[in-house]
Each structure stands twice: as structure tokens, then as C-alpha cells.
Image (cartoon, rainbow, N blue to C red):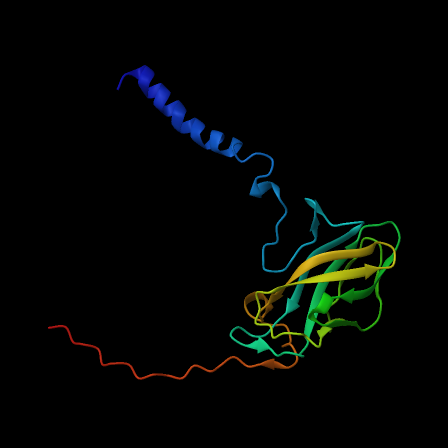
Length: 192
């Protein structure tokens, strides 16, 4: 191969990744916030948070893998909330539409610029009287009512109590996963 051809071929190989990256544009997946696990993050119209409320993690703890939360059962809702306003706010109520009622044990105080975890040491928010059984993987729209920020809505996933969630206390009234029964296996053939 002659030297000019070699330079052209090398330039094409070097330019390919750059051109491919340019084709992604401003809406590329790498330009959007994301959650590194199954829990939801409050992203509103491409911005992190809404009306001075940021929620870096939100999930409903479902059953163990392979089990289900029974109809009319309950499940804890875990939220990490950060109020970035200059003044304190309060989470007053939560609703889940027609999927069940949400009980907040007491209004949750949100000091300015302090992360509040609604699930530790014990869950302060429970989804009760669930209108259908849940296995995990579903998504439920929650409307959070704040005293100052108003209503903030987000879709929250139901996650199974496994992997990074395995150490959380089990959801009340969860039916256990079926126990696998061993089956006899055929004797292995010997190689001759």
C-alpha cells in the first residue's frame, strides 16, 4: 500500500469513533441523568428534581424474588428526599391513585439542603390495601403532597427483595416463593 493510501485509511479509522459520537447529538443517553439501580430518580423534563424537591432514590419494596404481595396487602415506600429550597418544607401526604391507600405515619419534615430517608430506621410511608397482587417489576404513580412545593408526581418501581434490597425487612403479608422440589436426574453415561 502506498503511503498516501495508508494515511487515508488510518485517518478513516481514527475518525470513525469521533463521527459516531457526533451522531448521538444532545439527546444522547450519556447526556441524561440515570439511576444505577432499579430505584427511580425524580427527573422532570430533563432536569433533576422539580420545584426545589430532589428525589435521588424512590422504590416500593415488593416480595422476595418468585413470591408476591397479596391483594389487599401492604408494602413500604422508600424515598430519599432533598429539599433544595432556602426554607424547610414538609411531605404531608402521598397518594397512589386507585392502587391502594398510602399511610404516612406523621408529616415528614424536610429541612433545607438535608437528605431525608423516609425508610430508616423504619418505613414511615406504607402502601396499604393494594388493589392487585404485586410480584415486582411493576411501576406505580405516586403523587407526593408537599406544604410549599405542592404536588410532585413520579412513577415508582416495585422492586423485589433481592440483590441490593435483600437486607431490607420483608413486606408484610408477602406470600413466600415456592420451594423448588428436587427431581431425580438420570445417571451420567460413562465415556468409552
